[in-house]
Length: 205
Length: 205
DNA sequence: TGAGACATGTAATCGGTTACATGATTCC
DNA sequence: GGAATCATGTAACCGATTACATGTCTCA
Image 1 (spheres, chains in turn red, brown, orange, green):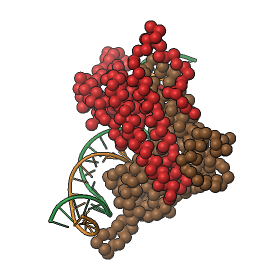
Image 2: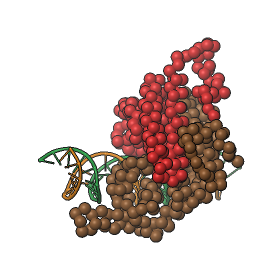
Image 3: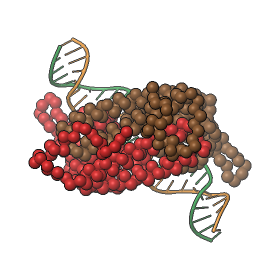
Image 4: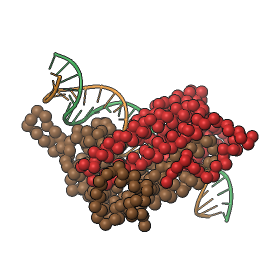
């Protein structure tokens, strides 16, 4: 109930601040969150559903004016369910069909539950991705016997992507594990932002 | 109607040979096609729907034995709809939410319609991917002002993935454009690494 | 005064997931 | 004789898409 990626994305948006359906609509259509939704026909019903389940509560703002807004905020139960959802393990199935949902969990877990939970997700993700990558390699080998070149290329693409995933995960794990505040300049947060030259974890071609 | 990725995958499977629902079930659960389905609850209804729409026709095999099989094959209308679906342009939206469907179209287009259609899809894919990648870069820059590190990492992942996509597309376009490739692979592993090092001679145009 | 953004929704439809149901056949 | 697998489905539920409906406010 209510743990579609879209619902999770909404919970995450409402975590920082209360918002109206229209606010969400704008946020989702302007940011990468757009991958989880798009239309009022998805967001408004989702909010209603979540309200029915007691996860959010809508309050009317500017009630007396001509332009009232229905603003939703998380309930205690909603916060509970939200954190609960973030703690879910990363499954193979999710890796195959819902990578974006995993990414979303990673981000929200980092922001809401802290570095360790984010790391946990990353490590599980990494493990599943590598196992799936190996399977794709096996399939590629098998495919070369019988299949078309096109299928071969497609499998190769899958492998490339999973390699990119794995590399990314390793990079970020390392970065998160490094002692949090280098504080070499006495400017804690600002120090990190300075890297314009990506380096991207080291090598890349 | 009936142009979900799953339906397309089924059409593609039936294109080469007639199959029963159970055959499809096995094929889908054993190959990368599994990403489009999984369960009898998806495949059987899909077959029924497609039959209702006149795209496939089921015939009972071994009618007099104790184990009859319902075998489906494409109708003329089904073949038409299939090819029609393969000719659809690659949209931005698809790149964001249904890359696997694009890959599927690429493979099937190559097998069914020939190299030129596969190339067309690849080129459209490449174009959309690069445009989306640029947008992600913009978002990343904007995000660094305000967002959390986690969001930043997630965006970086998106960018990595789209880079992998773009590189793959370029590689395969080049390979398909080379005149009737001999494709002799004495040593696959070594040859494959070559797609990173420019040992393959043919760089892209 | 009309276009376009603000703001909130509903209804129809479609299709996928989960879980269940049924019975035959094959293998140990 | 019991388990696994072959083989075919159905029903309930959930949630996303599409398209529509309604009205306000702002600005040129």
